[in-house]
Length: 528
Image (cartoon, rainbow, N blue to C red):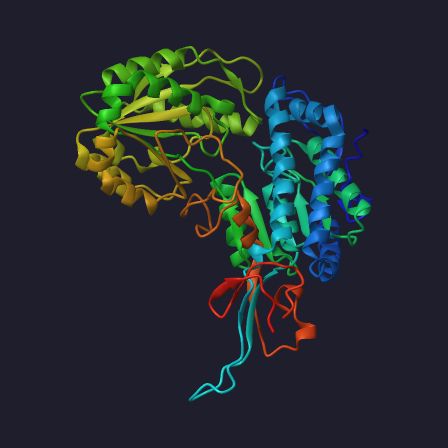
C-alpha cells in the first residue's frame, strides 16, 4: 500500500505544510521511504471541529453500533497483513514475532471493548424511583448513567507502535465510550500510524459512522500536540510516554480557561523487593528471570524493573548469577536516536559516581541505535542521598540496592514515589514477616506482583495499569483493561425525566436488557 504522508481529517486528506519528515530505520539510522507532512494548526482545528460535529451523532448510537465499528477496525487491521508488520518492523526494529503479537493484542483489545459495550454494565445505570408520599419530603425519580465527554485527543506511544498507538487502548476505550477521537501519530513510526489510521477510516465507512468520528494528524513539532490540547473542543487527553512529555501536556491542559483531564501514563522504575527467605532459597532462579524482565524489549517497556532491593548478607549467590546472565544478554536496538542518547547519558552518569559499582554489562551493541544491558549496585545509605537514582532509566538497565535490615527495606518502600508496579519475592514465612511492606506498596503503585515479574500487562477486566503521580496524572484510573473506558465518561443524573426522553439504559422497560441498580438492588427486570 502506497503511503500518502498526509493528515487524515475525517474522510479527507490534507497536506497544507511544505515541511516533511521521514521514518528512520533504527538499525542503520537511514531514512525510510515516505514523505510525511507536518500538520498545521488549521488542519488540527478542522479535525477537531469535525470530531465535535460527529460526536453529536456518534454519542447517541447504540452500544451495538459502536461495537460493530470496533470489530470492523479489528478486521481491517488484520486485513493489512504483512504490509503492516513489515512497516512496523522497519520503523521500530522490533522483531517480527513481537510485532505480530502486538497486532494480536491490539485486535483483541478492540474486540474486548466491543463485548463490554454490548453488555452495558460499564454504563453504571442506577435508578431510585420516586417516593411521592415520603415524609417529611417526597423524593423525585432519579436516574444515573455514564455519558461520554466529547472529542478526545490521543497521543501514540513510541514503544508500542500498535497496542498503545493509533488504534491502541486509549483510542479503543474512547471510541467505545462514545467519544470521537483525534490521534497524533508518533513521529517514530509515521508509516505504521498511517496504515492503521486508514484501516480505522475504512471501518468507519463500512459501518456508516459519522464523518469525523476519527482523524489523525502527524508531526515532529511539539506545537502539534499543544494545538490539540489547547483546543476548546477537546474534552480529554490520553497519553503514554515520558514524564517530560506527559507533564507538559498536563500543564497545558490545566492552563486552559476550562481545564480538562489528562490521562498520562509517564513511566516507572517498578521496584522489586526480594525478601530474605526467597533470596536464600531461590537466588539463581530469581536472578535469571529478573534479567529477562530487565532486558525484555531492550528495556523499552514502562514496566521493566529498574530498582531491586535485596537484604545484605545473603546476596552473593544472587549477584553472581545476575552477573552471569547480564553478561550473556545480547545487545539490542532502541527505537529512536533520542531514546538511545537518553539511555547512554543516564547510564554514563551512574558509572561516573564513585558510590556506584558497575556490576555487569551485556554484550557490546551494534547498529546505529544499539545499546548494551547494564546492572549497577549501590548501598542503601548512598541510595538514600541520591533521589535521582529512583527515577526511570528507559532501557535495559537496573540498580541493585543492598539494604542492611528489615527496617531499611521498609524505609525504602515508604520513601518511594508513585510507580506503575511493585514486585515482592518471598516465601510464606517472608510474607507473614513483611506484611507491613504490602500495606506500604498498596499506596505507592497500581499493581502489586507477588513472586512474578512486572513485564507483561494482561488486557482484562481486573488489570490496573496506572499508579500515583509521577507514574500517572490520574491515579484513580487505568489505561489497560476494561475499566479504561471510565476515563472518558462522566456521570449524569436525570431527575423526573419523561420515560420517552431517557436513554435506553434507563427506560422503564430496560430495552437493552442490562443489569441496573434499582432502589439499591441489582436487577435486569423492567420497572412496572
